Length: 175
Image (cartoon, rainbow, N blue to C red):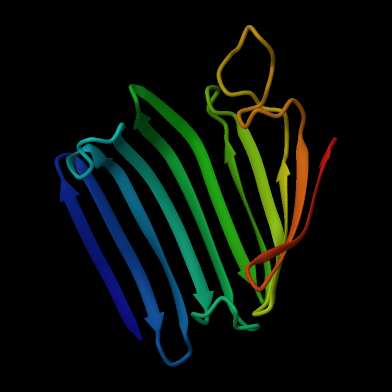
């Protein structure tokens, strides 16, 4: 069993990693905590400035094509400063459980309201998935119409099936 605790400090910011790894059983879990970390010190030409976030991860097996693999990641971005605005309430979750995958992105910030989910199955020969835009949230305000952030006027669903790196079929529906 390997246990890790690491910290990175920069200015008033701090990143903390707490993790465990069992190489014999191929099991892992951990947390990453980010508190007011100044991304602009490392990415000076980017518009990202400061981030506060946390993530939890856990799993068993390393190869996503292994039918017994299980992994989950939950990321919560409490706040991120981008292009002069502070965005809050962003969540990203992903799960792979024995060939079944699911996840989503949600944001409750009034200037970036969104809800997106993905689900599907994964095997060495085939990937099948579904993407759902959960609601007609809007990006900012617009006097020309109420399109959602991705340019759609209504919620949508999209199904895809991949095999050998080719799209076998695709279909979308607008609700």
